[in-house]
Image 1 (cartoon, rainbow, N blue to C red):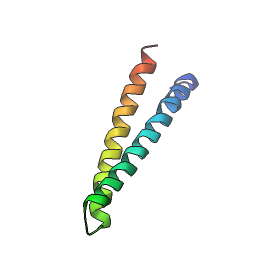
Image 2 (cartoon, one colour):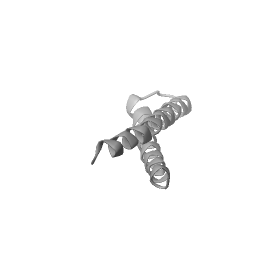
Image 3 (cartoon, helix red, strand yellow):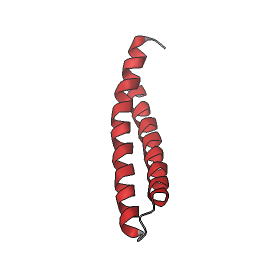
Image 4 (cartoon, helix red, strand yellow):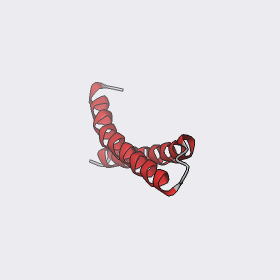
Length: 69
């Protein structure tokens, strides 16, 4: 992988990290509000799952968009 490709990879990763983090925080807030016990595992497992899925999809879409240019 040359340095130009690494720069494009880093550019695509940054918005994906932000989107994944926001999705995880929103999910954690929603699950925490919806469950009366506030169990940490009950809150974090769905938040991590949704955050990772959103990160993966965003990274895939951003890489496809950069490759098409």
